Length: 329
Image 1 (tube, rainbow, N blue to C red):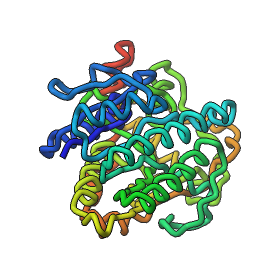
Image 2: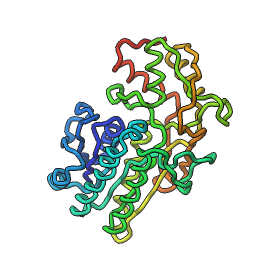
Image 3: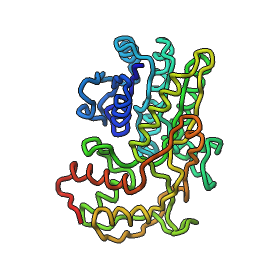
Image 4: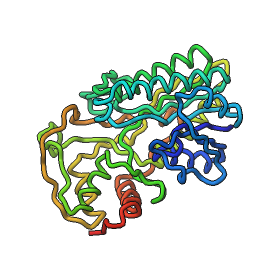
């Protein structure tokens, strides 16, 4: 099969492209390069520069490359920015998806994998989040991902399209330094940035109802996440046309890691010893969000392989490449 991977020049997208081609699948990258980096696209993989809002360009890419499946990762994804710019987020994430699905269904492409997020759950008050946990997003970013799932499933039902909505938990790590995340929006790069500046990392609140008082999250290595996309793509490709698949799956490790433990391990692995400082809670931070990944294991025969130390070590190597002034402690 040939898979069009939207956002394939981004951090996660580049790993998905690498996993797909490594598994023997053909890939085509479609990316507007607003945050993606063209150099991440491997030699031999076509790169089409364009927005998913441009339905004609998408349709041409599907036709020119004889695409038989789509993995849709292109999206705006910063929670805080989505609060400030909700109309922009709905336009890019929802209208962009609608235009893409219109082109996909018109071309009778049979398989569609959608990049969703644990943000659809909001602030779940459960030990393990299952796919049946109520979806109550608390910011426009999470709302656009939930609406996106509705669109994908509705298009699947109406057009016989096999679909998979993958709800990512907290992604970290890299397969190679050159593929590292260039943003500083998640805990690992945020701590790296403080260490690079010789400043203590920050903990946003230490009075949560958790064992050490700090928030608990489920972290997954980006390589494991990319492998989940390969498994989902192949699962959809194997679905009979008369009975299209409609999957909604959590992609996580099912293991909670507190913010304090994460910072401690980052200090140890990077050779630093800067104790964190505690500041006020951030609005909307749930105490605990940890996935149940049982359904993904059953449906895809997939399970995360890499642990926390793998994520931190690989991410630090990527950080050192991007930030020459950083140093090992």
